[in-house]
Length: 250
Ligand code: SF4
Figure 1 (tube, protein in one colour):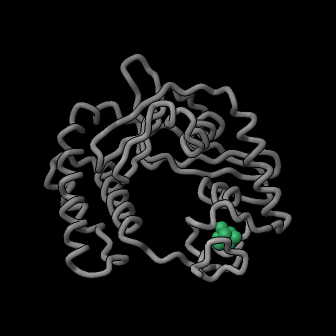
Figure 2 (cartoon, rainbow, N blue to C red):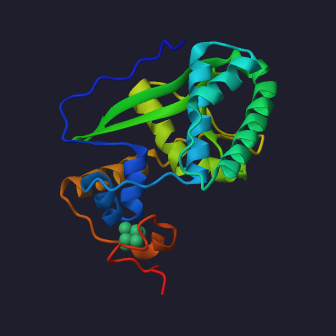
Figure 3 (cartoon, rainbow, N blue to C red):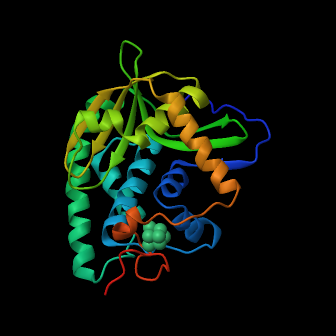
């Protein structure tokens, strides 16, 4: 489907994805627990549901199939049963996923012709580091403008202002420009459960600052600088057993 190619990179010292960048910025100690010590975060109903939908959408869009039956078939085959407290809970989530996919399919036909690629990887070098990422989908409008699309499976939808400022979307836009040589004009968050697509024009101002932030995180990781940052403790998966946690249960 795609003619876009990821740029090759020269020898570099450390590779960083958006997830690693985000977690290091939230709490370097959490980064260490996850990516140095190899701690795992068990699936929750929310993360299991989101992962299943992403897997189904990715497989269906890549397959070139167009029918609803094929989309639901991919949902069945890519569905993860882990993370739910019981079978009823899983069955309710599966029914919700079927509703979301059915609605998504109803809106999809008019868009599909514009798809340039799905699950598109980008790679680029920033200083001594490799920056790597995967864009859910890239569409192109009749006037040639590129739209970067990210699928979200939460209940709510962001505002256009939030989409324009979203660090993950801007990370992908930077990767599209520097790793794929593609100028995105629009950023879109497709909320497949909420049934809303929220778009914002992409403004490249601030790319250098983001690049500097990514380099700073990569340099910190490379230097094994993992100080705890307790701002995110209340939302951290390790809050109950982390020695630095500021959100342990009394
Ligand atoms: S509990 Fe707090 S200090 Fe510990 S890893 Fe999580 S965010 Fe960092």
